[in-house]
Image (cartoon, rainbow, N blue to C red; front, side):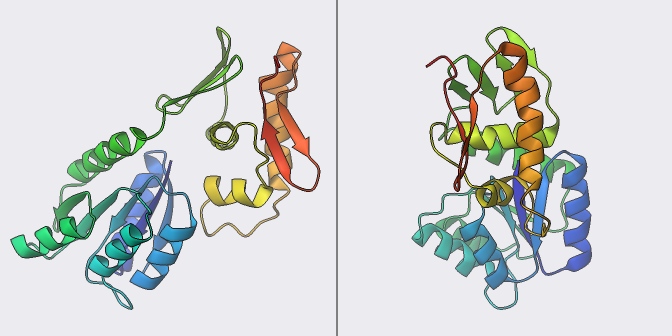
Amino acid sequence: MRLLIVEDERELAETLRRGLLAEGYDVDVAHDGGTGLEFAMTHGYQAVILDLMLPRMNGFQVCARLRESRVDTPVLVLTAKDGEYDEAEALDTGADDYLTKPFSYVVLLARVRALLRRGRAARPALLTVGDLVVDQAQRRCSRGTTPIRLTAKQFAVLACLARRAGTAVSKADIVDEVWDAAYDGDLNIIEVYVAALRRVVDVPFGVRSIETVRGEGYRLVDARA
Protein backbone atom coordinates (compact mmCIF):
# COMPACT_ATOMS: atom_id res chain seq x y z
CA MET A 1 0.00 0.00 0.00
CA ARG A 2 1.18 3.47 -0.86
CA LEU A 3 1.25 6.33 1.66
CA LEU A 4 2.09 10.03 1.40
CA ILE A 5 3.82 11.99 4.17
CA VAL A 6 3.50 15.79 3.93
CA GLU A 7 5.91 17.13 6.56
CA ASP A 8 8.38 20.04 6.43
CA GLU A 9 10.54 18.75 9.31
CA ARG A 10 12.87 16.73 7.10
CA GLU A 11 14.40 14.63 9.86
CA LEU A 12 10.98 13.62 11.17
CA ALA A 13 9.72 12.93 7.65
CA GLU A 14 12.70 10.68 6.94
CA THR A 15 12.26 8.83 10.24
CA LEU A 16 8.60 8.21 9.46
CA ARG A 17 9.41 7.17 5.90
CA ARG A 18 11.96 4.59 7.03
CA GLY A 19 9.67 3.23 9.72
CA LEU A 20 6.73 2.84 7.35
CA LEU A 21 8.94 1.27 4.68
CA ALA A 22 10.03 -1.29 7.28
CA GLU A 23 6.33 -2.05 7.87
CA GLY A 24 5.94 -2.91 4.19
CA TYR A 25 4.37 0.30 2.89
CA ASP A 26 5.50 2.25 -0.17
CA VAL A 27 6.05 5.85 0.93
CA ASP A 28 6.35 9.22 -0.81
CA VAL A 29 7.34 12.43 0.98
CA ALA A 30 6.53 16.07 0.25
CA HIS A 31 8.02 18.93 2.28
CA ASP A 32 5.50 21.67 1.51
CA GLY A 33 1.75 21.92 1.13
CA GLY A 34 1.73 22.74 -2.57
CA THR A 35 3.78 19.69 -3.50
CA GLY A 36 1.79 17.53 -1.09
CA LEU A 37 -1.48 18.62 -2.70
CA GLU A 38 -0.11 17.91 -6.18
CA PHE A 39 1.06 14.44 -5.14
CA ALA A 40 -2.22 13.62 -3.40
CA MET A 41 -4.26 14.78 -6.39
CA THR A 42 -2.30 12.80 -8.98
CA HIS A 43 -1.22 9.57 -7.26
CA GLY A 44 -3.30 6.72 -5.90
CA TYR A 45 -2.43 6.85 -2.19
CA GLN A 46 -4.23 4.76 0.38
CA ALA A 47 -3.64 7.36 3.13
CA VAL A 48 -1.99 10.74 3.71
CA ILE A 49 -0.12 11.79 6.87
CA LEU A 50 -0.39 15.58 6.87
CA ASP A 51 1.28 18.28 8.95
CA LEU A 52 -0.65 21.54 9.43
CA MET A 53 2.13 24.13 9.59
CA LEU A 54 3.59 23.84 6.11
CA PRO A 55 5.22 26.27 3.67
CA ARG A 56 3.37 27.35 0.49
CA MET A 57 0.03 25.97 1.66
CA ASN A 58 -0.99 24.92 5.16
CA GLY A 59 -2.49 21.57 6.02
CA PHE A 60 -6.00 22.95 6.48
CA GLN A 61 -5.91 24.29 2.92
CA VAL A 62 -4.48 21.05 1.53
CA CYS A 63 -7.20 18.98 3.15
CA ALA A 64 -9.95 21.37 2.07
CA ARG A 65 -8.74 21.38 -1.54
CA LEU A 66 -8.63 17.58 -1.61
CA ARG A 67 -12.21 17.30 -0.42
CA GLU A 68 -13.40 20.05 -2.77
CA SER A 69 -11.86 18.02 -5.60
CA ARG A 70 -13.63 14.88 -4.34
CA VAL A 71 -10.40 13.11 -3.45
CA ASP A 72 -11.50 10.87 -0.57
CA THR A 73 -8.08 9.51 0.44
CA PRO A 74 -8.03 9.12 4.25
CA VAL A 75 -6.03 11.90 5.96
CA LEU A 76 -4.27 11.66 9.32
CA VAL A 77 -3.23 15.07 10.60
CA LEU A 78 0.06 14.95 12.53
CA THR A 79 0.86 18.30 14.11
CA ALA A 80 2.24 20.25 17.05
CA LYS A 81 -0.96 22.33 17.13
CA ASP A 82 -2.83 20.78 20.03
CA GLY A 83 -5.68 23.24 20.54
CA GLU A 84 -9.24 21.97 20.39
CA TYR A 85 -10.16 24.59 17.78
CA ASP A 86 -7.29 23.46 15.54
CA GLU A 87 -8.45 19.86 15.82
CA ALA A 88 -12.05 20.85 15.13
CA GLU A 89 -11.01 22.88 12.07
CA ALA A 90 -8.91 20.02 10.70
CA LEU A 91 -11.79 17.56 11.06
CA ASP A 92 -14.26 20.06 9.61
CA THR A 93 -12.08 20.58 6.52
CA GLY A 94 -12.05 16.84 5.86
CA ALA A 95 -9.34 15.18 7.96
CA ASP A 96 -10.22 11.70 9.23
CA ASP A 97 -7.99 11.62 12.32
CA TYR A 98 -5.80 13.95 14.37
CA LEU A 99 -2.60 13.14 16.30
CA THR A 100 -0.48 15.70 18.13
CA LYS A 101 3.32 15.86 18.46
CA PRO A 102 5.14 14.46 20.32
CA PHE A 103 3.47 11.15 19.56
CA SER A 104 3.90 7.43 20.10
CA TYR A 105 5.05 5.67 16.92
CA VAL A 106 3.08 2.59 17.99
CA VAL A 107 -0.07 4.72 18.18
CA LEU A 108 0.71 6.32 14.82
CA LEU A 109 0.94 2.89 13.18
CA ALA A 110 -2.34 1.85 14.79
CA ARG A 111 -4.04 5.02 13.53
CA VAL A 112 -2.70 4.42 10.01
CA ARG A 113 -3.96 0.82 10.05
CA ALA A 114 -7.38 2.02 11.20
CA LEU A 115 -7.53 4.57 8.37
CA LEU A 116 -6.59 1.91 5.85
CA ARG A 117 -9.32 -0.40 7.11
CA ARG A 118 -11.87 2.38 6.77
CA GLY A 119 -10.56 3.32 3.34
CA ARG A 120 -10.88 -0.26 2.12
CA ALA A 121 -14.55 -0.34 3.09
CA ALA A 122 -15.40 1.56 -0.09
CA ARG A 123 -13.88 -1.10 -2.32
CA PRO A 124 -13.89 -4.88 -1.94
CA ALA A 125 -10.93 -6.57 -0.30
CA LEU A 126 -11.37 -9.56 -2.61
CA LEU A 127 -10.93 -8.97 -6.32
CA THR A 128 -12.14 -11.88 -8.46
CA VAL A 129 -11.38 -12.17 -12.16
CA GLY A 130 -12.65 -15.54 -13.35
CA ASP A 131 -11.10 -18.11 -11.02
CA LEU A 132 -8.25 -15.75 -10.09
CA VAL A 133 -8.68 -14.25 -6.61
CA VAL A 134 -6.61 -11.29 -5.39
CA ASP A 135 -7.04 -10.67 -1.65
CA GLN A 136 -5.98 -7.05 -1.03
CA ALA A 137 -6.45 -7.28 2.72
CA GLN A 138 -4.28 -10.38 3.23
CA ARG A 139 -2.07 -9.67 0.19
CA ARG A 140 -2.64 -13.19 -1.09
CA CYS A 141 -3.44 -14.59 -4.50
CA SER A 142 -4.91 -17.87 -5.71
CA ARG A 143 -6.35 -19.46 -8.83
CA GLY A 144 -9.20 -21.71 -7.88
CA THR A 145 -8.05 -23.46 -4.71
CA THR A 146 -4.35 -23.20 -5.59
CA PRO A 147 -2.42 -20.46 -3.74
CA ILE A 148 0.09 -18.46 -5.80
CA ARG A 149 3.22 -17.04 -4.19
CA LEU A 150 4.12 -13.53 -5.33
CA THR A 151 6.67 -10.93 -4.30
CA ALA A 152 5.30 -7.69 -2.85
CA LYS A 153 5.83 -5.80 -6.14
CA GLN A 154 4.38 -8.62 -8.24
CA PHE A 155 1.30 -8.62 -6.03
CA ALA A 156 0.97 -4.83 -6.31
CA VAL A 157 1.16 -4.96 -10.12
CA LEU A 158 -1.42 -7.76 -10.27
CA ALA A 159 -3.74 -5.92 -7.87
CA CYS A 160 -3.45 -2.79 -10.01
CA LEU A 161 -4.59 -4.78 -13.06
CA ALA A 162 -7.30 -6.60 -11.08
CA ARG A 163 -8.83 -3.35 -9.84
CA ARG A 164 -9.36 -2.39 -13.49
CA ALA A 165 -10.11 -5.85 -14.84
CA GLY A 166 -11.17 -5.85 -18.47
CA THR A 167 -9.56 -2.45 -19.08
CA ALA A 168 -6.13 -1.77 -20.58
CA VAL A 169 -3.78 -0.18 -18.03
CA SER A 170 -0.74 1.68 -19.33
CA LYS A 171 2.80 1.13 -18.07
CA ALA A 172 2.84 4.72 -16.81
CA ASP A 173 -0.35 4.17 -14.79
CA ILE A 174 1.03 0.98 -13.26
CA VAL A 175 4.30 2.69 -12.29
CA ASP A 176 2.37 5.65 -10.88
CA GLU A 177 0.28 3.39 -8.65
CA VAL A 178 2.86 0.79 -7.60
CA TRP A 179 6.20 2.64 -7.44
CA ASP A 180 6.90 5.80 -5.45
CA ALA A 181 6.97 9.26 -7.00
CA ALA A 182 10.76 9.34 -6.96
CA TYR A 183 10.96 6.50 -9.51
CA ASP A 184 12.46 7.80 -12.74
CA GLY A 185 13.60 4.53 -14.29
CA ASP A 186 12.60 2.82 -17.51
CA LEU A 187 8.87 2.08 -17.85
CA ASN A 188 9.84 -1.21 -19.46
CA ILE A 189 10.37 -2.54 -15.94
CA ILE A 190 6.65 -3.33 -16.19
CA GLU A 191 7.37 -5.82 -18.97
CA VAL A 192 9.67 -7.69 -16.60
CA TYR A 193 7.00 -7.88 -13.88
CA VAL A 194 4.24 -8.86 -16.29
CA ALA A 195 6.41 -11.65 -17.71
CA ALA A 196 7.12 -12.88 -14.17
CA LEU A 197 3.41 -12.76 -13.30
CA ARG A 198 2.47 -14.75 -16.39
CA ARG A 199 4.93 -17.46 -15.40
CA VAL A 200 3.20 -18.03 -12.06
CA VAL A 201 -0.38 -16.81 -12.61
CA ASP A 202 -1.06 -18.13 -16.11
CA VAL A 203 1.43 -20.69 -17.44
CA PRO A 204 1.05 -23.38 -14.72
CA PHE A 205 -2.73 -23.31 -15.25
CA GLY A 206 -2.67 -23.33 -19.05
CA VAL A 207 -4.47 -19.98 -19.35
CA ARG A 208 -3.81 -16.47 -20.68
CA SER A 209 -5.42 -13.93 -18.41
CA ILE A 210 -2.85 -11.11 -18.68
CA GLU A 211 -3.18 -9.71 -22.18
CA THR A 212 -0.91 -7.26 -23.98
CA VAL A 213 -2.91 -4.47 -25.60
CA ARG A 214 -0.66 -3.05 -28.28
CA GLY A 215 -0.01 0.65 -27.81
CA GLU A 216 -2.08 0.79 -24.59
CA GLY A 217 -0.65 -1.51 -21.93
CA TYR A 218 -1.91 -4.66 -20.23
CA ARG A 219 -5.35 -6.03 -19.43
CA LEU A 220 -6.43 -8.70 -16.94
CA VAL A 221 -9.35 -10.78 -18.18
CA ASP A 222 -11.37 -13.85 -17.20
CA ALA A 223 -9.26 -16.66 -18.68
CA ARG A 224 -12.29 -18.95 -18.73
CA ALA A 225 -14.34 -16.67 -20.97
